[in-house]
Length: 423
Image (cartoon, rainbow, N blue to C red):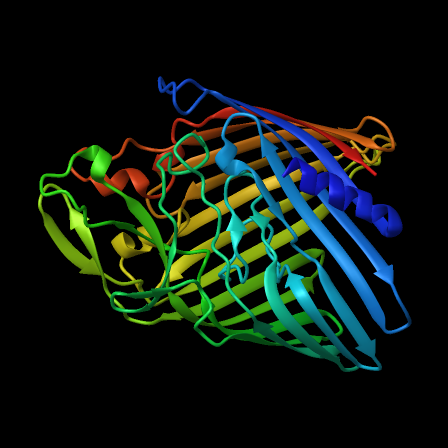
């Protein structure tokens, strides 16, 4: 990967570019497990270059890469926004890889991410470029967009040595076509049709999509080949289902408040997959149809000393399934986020942030995050902070309970420092 990075960085000398190079270190509380390590360090590169060949043609090279020093499962290189685009009057077309992030909320989202994810870093989920063909037609205050997805790519998951994930090794994901029939993510006709309209005080976004859901896999304990399987024979594999999603969002202002709403309906193909129940039994399960609603509100307060504070609230809820089934759909099923960013508005851009997330249904899971960031110079930035996770111990009589909610990361309190160089 190092040689590929050197080649691409050399290529950017012929293009207009901007980028970021960061070093991140996280120190965790000890979990008594030597294999997971109590620290993780990595170097992260983000690069965006472009070249206009004419008034109509433009080439964009977007790249993200990570080199981890401890858990090399976190290493990756992705051309996340690399494409060739053509623009003519109100029309534009682009072919290559694209990153779609249409969520208007900052932390929660009712949308299933339309692209694959690198779920390793924990704090900032990285979106991987989706091979696709994009058409856009712009009107006076709106646009229509059609995306033809050439192929889905699998998400990247934290493995056993990553303290910010399930802390288990996962097998290679499979795309579900039918019962006992799987593919590489290229058999389904995948598309997104989007319409966005801007009004005087409101933005409305609506889209429908048909694709493989690479962000919400069904984790299956595979049927072992051994007659009397031991722990070393057990394998857990992510399965991606076909998903038809209908989503909308509204963003508006009321007095000094910025109000946000997202809603989605998830319809999956009801295809059951057989899974193993230790010690010697099995059952079948399918991904559950459901709906999601996310709400948000923001307000900025200005102080006499030229400081400002941005207050933020968000809420998410899953409907249409039982609370037990909702646990399999992600760590946040009915949760609230409350937080604030206090900016000193000085030359160095000092900003202090505090966020608290809690389970509004059981009130037994909390995340507390405190951070401070500032510019050391025009090109350098320093960020440091701490994260505390409070979650109950898993039910010892239910082996699957340790994978639900925040229980997989309940012993992953950490402090972190990130040094970034912009160029």
